[in-house]
Image 1 (cartoon, rainbow, N blue to C red):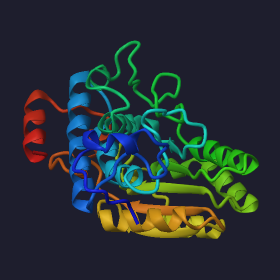
Image 2: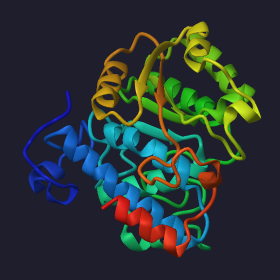
Image 3: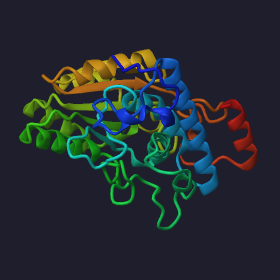
Length: 298
């Protein structure tokens, strides 16, 4: 169950509590409605930063953001005053082009500034085009070619075991990313090593770089594939905060086996002309489109 202490925004967290080491993260909301409001603000950040940069990946960022907010708002252990706290949970954005989702979350947490996200994809910016832990506080993985994040997460999970740490490792991958063989090598190894502190979230929006997956190369039943590798699998509506929170709670509190959460989502969720539109995998909205997007997100 997520905490409820009667605050209404990220910036009004009780200061005494904020000085403590967080066990459940920095977003302390009374209700799922408030978490969805935070997700709405993140969506505004996403479309604005991609528009300002004139480039980026809005579609997959918008599909992923509800789960990210749900995670940081419930079981995720993270200290906004010390993002490098050694015993924090880890969030690994393997589909690193969805960096606007991560940056918008970190902005709402107060870890990075509005100026940082406004400089998205500029030379020397805190907010690089792909997430990079060398540049951005609160980022735990430097993303490049797709398919590597689950292997990295497995290593983090095994390291936590060696450290006798309670930290959980969360990896978000794209469904198109599951076409990479390295994903399944990591899945096999995770089952062999019984890493119950490793959780993967599959952003199942059914669109990849150029087109729908059914056109490019459909992967089939991803959940059944993970089950065949010995994982516990949950299938959820990736935009339903109740289902998101329930899945996070179950995965966080079961340390006997790795969990795969297949989050069925809509690419471009929240902006009508981006929804289920492959063009906005990696395309910035125009000036006129930004106006429409912000109206729809208001």
